[in-house]
Image (cartoon, rainbow, N blue to C red; front, side, top):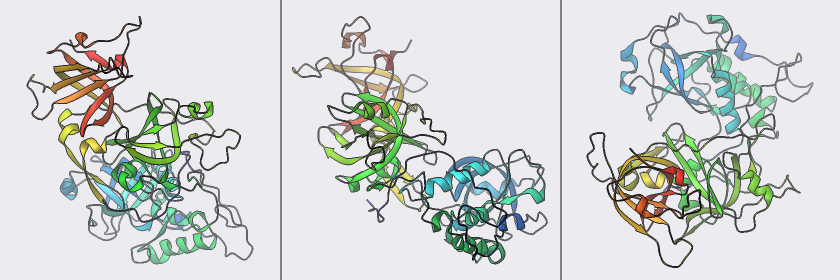
Length: 473
């Protein structure tokens, strides 16, 4: 595994950043100094020239990735630019855009200060906007990771769509202090707009170039990572303190499970949070199922429980503590909520599949598919019971059922390599009677919902709610 290289801190809020208004004396975001040169709005000065020899394509957002990377779909019936199907045939019509001239802080792996806020800024600007992407010359240029290097132009939602109303988002990110230099001078708009905008942001000490607090960045002594990064490099973080965010999906025994969806890979990534035997009521409130939480704790590994985050707490008398595990709130102070994904997965992928996970810093990680989705919710359909076993060893798990299944395809045939175990906790009917294996005889067809776990080196689905185990008609 590739080792992480930078010591990061952690994220707390996911509220959208509201761009401060420019004052009449030329300030954009905070510093009032009579010695500063007059503020110049390079974004307003730069105009989209629809007659230039550059390539242009009207697009719609497919996926928001981070501050300087967005995936687009071409607008095939565009009245602004038209559409040439051959231009994007090599990428099946998807335009993975890496913004020219700007490098925003990371928010998809190691979470850096201003990374999530920059990502939110880009999302806010492009949401509902009319968008045109432009090449730097007369070619659609790509980097080594098959991403198009582009200028991003947009007309905000609700404004009249005409050339003079298009704004350049690359320069806007630089002008507001969200970007580091990335070949900023050596491009079409570098000398007159991109570089001056970056220089001005530094002079005015905006965002990255300030001591200002970033509300989307948690100033704690921990490695600030996404669940995607943590799961892909889990061994590197064992016995280290981390801060991660995710939606609480399930509660089992003295633990909850959190997960977060990664749009680029299309996977959920998750981990178990062990809150102990005497948790504070404030911690339990924060860890309510459906809440988005910011978790601070130590990553541990044991043979019996696998990977967990331990040592979590919420000190209500000291909300300023950087070690608190808290519910994430939006800009209005309301707790951010969501639901477990329970995506429909294929058993053969879980038990023996492989996957490649790509990060925005061009890192690629190869994982067993089951390892990638460990501790996340899943739905398995068309499971045919082939064997059952009920635990009877005198312990707390007496009555738990292990159901061995094959998954069938749409024609009722067994999918090769699809044998998987569905393991229940001790389940009871509403009348208090124990659920038994006799209710799921060999040959029964099941749909099972639960979370992915590993037992004796094998990946299986854990079901902890009776309603999550249904007999198919």
